[in-house]
Length: 256
Image 1: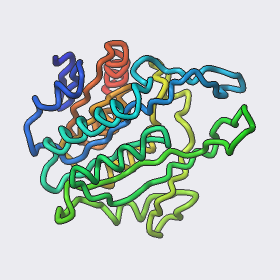
Image 2: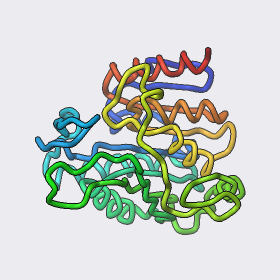
Image 3: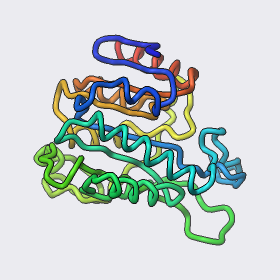
């Protein structure tokens, strides 16, 4: 169900497994997906110096390996259908889900281009002190198949300044990007909101103006906000009305 449509921005409410088939096949240039990591298992983490639960909601709870993998395979299969022949997909994750994602990508015939390590310099400490502190997420970048001639705006990425990849040098596969700032959360909070800088790199690298960007797990709408900022079109899908409302607030602020 379309709940928001304005100037090349479309937000759809519902299950991506049901809504992805309604999108025209071969129409999307770039997909960014931040799927459930399946890590809401009753554990603890550190936030703002305090011990808090890692639970984010029922949508982030594991249903067991077989069902989790089946879900991953099915949504990726539908994403492949809507991608242009030369389109690409980016998927973020942690050890809880990223290896299932990689296996499903290869099983479906995708060709993995890069494994990006998003290094978080201000990541929270590990409170259990029983293993290394988690300070990065993995992002897999893949094209539809091995023969596809994907978009990569090499020169723009080479100019991008990064503490790990200095300007005028080839951008490396380790990206130095702090966690999402409070300023980006002033319209409301989503437990897995990604920073604008991360999506700027992804969308700039793999698409051009007026291209169609898709996010099957819209969340707080950062993918759409950046798509709008960079002159792209956007479709976002999410089950939760409260997060779609948050996205609409962010779009309205951007218009102002």
